[in-house]
Length: 78
Image 1: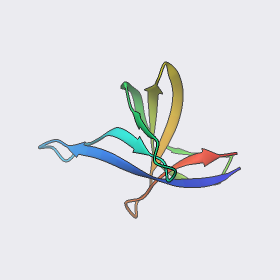
Image 2: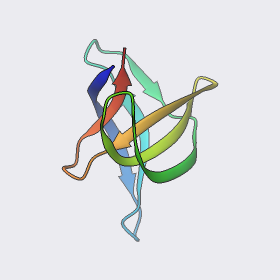
Image 3: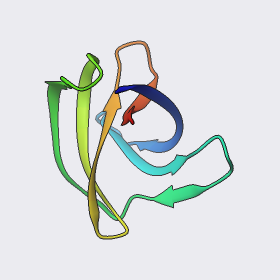
């Protein structure tokens, strides 16, 4: 497994909290994030990355989206 960097559309509230709303794949597909069930600092053992982990529900499936300190988003890639 490796990190797959993705483009994300996110909104920032007045407290500075980040909420991702869409994930954009390089092949042109877009996925709306239905809801976020958890946000925590975490490490992924699959790809060795770390950051803020957003547990997202996308099309009824649980997915993990990570936000690194350098401002980039990634998912675990197969």
